[in-house]
Amino acid sequence: QGYHEFTYSLYPHKNDWKQANSVRKGYELNTPLQVLLLEKNKTQLSVLPPTAELINLKAENLILMALKITEDNSNNILLRGYECHGESVNLSFDNLLNLSLKTRVNLLEDEIKNQDKLINPYQIFNFCLDF
Image 1 (tube, rainbow, N blue to C red):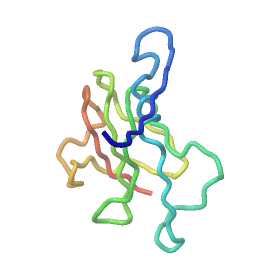
Image 2 (cartoon, rainbow, N blue to C red):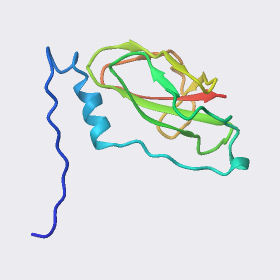
Image 3 (cartoon, rainbow, N blue to C red):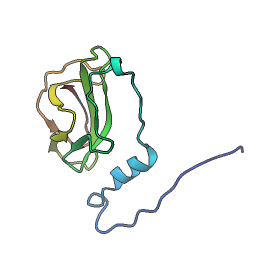
């Protein structure tokens, strides 16, 4: 009953779902990029080029879920993601924002003891970044 709306997509590919990046393609379809405009005085981020790859998680099995200012400190940025192929990987990324890893945090953004960059299979990860 009622009005229903849905989106679907066919994604033909070679080899298995991991090599085809099926999880990433599904995430891109179901979660479009959200752009938030900030007032100039509310952020310290510099002016960016009109088109660019702002951040690149080098491993294909890491999915970026959020890149946001932390709740308690507007001078820190939170990087949140998860591993989608069931394989351990070390976190490594390139970016145009001059961000660097500061500390590993939990979902409440509290610092945790485990500070290594190893992401375990299917694990959600959170890191505070300096800029």
